[in-house]
Length: 318
Image (cartoon, rainbow, N blue to C red; front, side, top):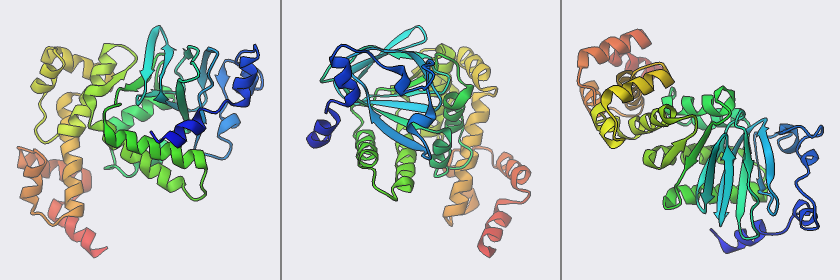
């Protein structure tokens, strides 16, 4: 990260100065009634997204948020306790915490520099609009983070060595920290691109809520990145599990099967190609991994009430 930006983020805040004089974290700064939750109105009044540096030198007591929080460690390491699990974030790593996530943070030292992105769920929905409509992975993330998740819910991305992710996060920090007017749309797009990058690194993602939830997240990420030639057998082998075990976990967490998730992703990718290219329909079907042309046509007719060719003609007439 840029040395000048690190220097600015390392400056001692008023809250940290009081802590160094013998105090602790004052929860009234985060909730007027000193309840164990951080109020959105304290940091997000009239905003979808904000940023603040992590408070060092004292442990942050157990709490939850009225918004989604993403912590990024710029330098050093910061340790969270989510549920019964201890998670140490090192420089370059991201931790997503949902509205129901109950967690505390160990005291960070002077050289442990972290930033918190504070985000209303609606911001994610706007960012995901740039993706291909119905996206099972983005739906899973939104549901997990915006109130459907459990108290031990989190998403941890160990992406310190993924340069595109690091560049995008630094751009977000710079933009939000400088507070330039008119940058809201740019920030939404940057967040959307960030998620597209994170989807390409399913092996670097970890989630709370137990093994089945972790397998479900990895399955969705795997399908998103490899839908053209993805198979249940390969995914199960990557995770060292039996196919039956993987199927049961996915069904239990997502309410549907690996096969249906894969077919839906291939279908949405095909529709995207129909909208953005002039490829013959047969080539579109083959290019996204569909092996059953008649099944594609039948599904398309059910969803859109017309054939792919008619769909294209209608689009051209608009």
